[in-house]
Length: 354
Ligand code: PLP
Image: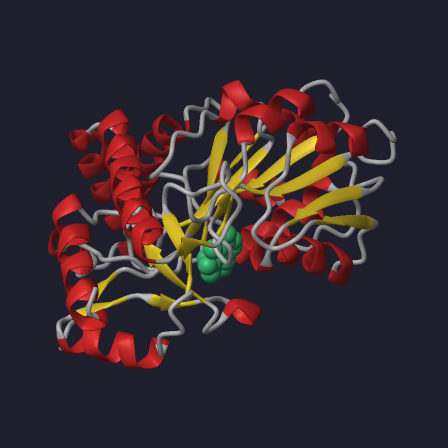
């Protein structure tokens, strides 16, 4: 049975977009492809509130995290770690031989602007990595406040993983001064997995030129060379880029503000349900608008619960890593609607006996 996905990616993809994926192939060096490419890029700029270039990568978001690390870190990077995915920034930096420190806090906690300022004031860093929405813990970091601090350190390149937030929450890249902002197709954008996109500032492109051993596939300078021809480095997933373009039209038809409000209303609804029946895992003040991580305070068997939900055509996620069984996760992102959330809650109530 096909299941409605209430998991934090991949998210439900509308039939219209699935159909768009079955287009006839065109050459990736053709003018027809360049047309699709440049239209998609301008729509992405609008989505990201940026005039920076937006690169499209034939990889999932992790590839672009590696790209950001390889192109932007010269002196030393500070990685803000508050869960699994933010920890990946640090792992990727270390595995690429980059000088980096991890500033780690408890899972469930988020970063304050003051604590980031204190560390940047050391003068040790020329780059900072933040995960806007930590999908393992349900923490959404206060990016507007953090960005205000980072702007006082012009030598620091600000790299943001917005994989589970962009397209569901307002992120004004230029206003925030984000140098590299990346996301994947399969979360709030509600397109099948396999491609990712990132905005790259002039400052980041300049820095990249001076950094040795940037590799090839993820080198910003190679991205740039092809971007200027409205092409990609190598054969891209053409059907997926085409589907993304179509989905962006749908997003603008809904209206960006409406889309963000819908995410926020769905989040409030799920939080209210969680608070009256369980507890919310992350610290208050850091609750995410795209997914809610809930303490399994009733000791429910997650496998049993999800099996029964599955029989009713829906699925949610277990806790991530060390939070497995202790928490469970309900995503309210992408094209899900309030009615979907209500139906999910009615079914959860019925199965759990609430
Ligand atoms: N960052 C966050 C916050 C994520 O949630 C994920 C995936 O779930 C990733 C990075 C990795 O993205 P991808 O699977 O597209 O490589």
